[in-house]
Image (cartoon, rainbow, N blue to C red; front, top):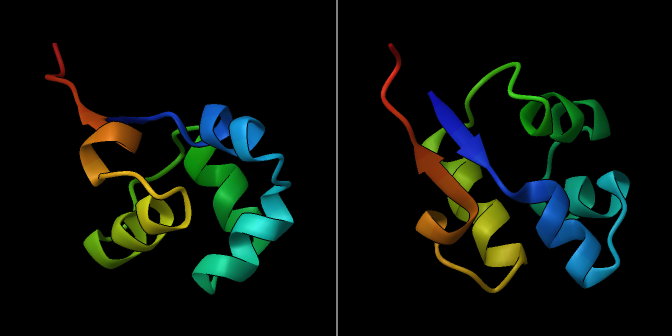
Length: 67
């Protein structure tokens, strides 16, 4: 399972979901669904999200083993 710190990073940068969506070229609903863990981002989208936060992919996303 992939966990993310997108909401935490958005708060740090004072971004709304819509702001991040515009920066990464996706819909606001996509950002919301990613934050809630409803699905995992593609590698390109994860890269673009991390880039928007001036962070590495590993800083924003972590992989956890499923039981």
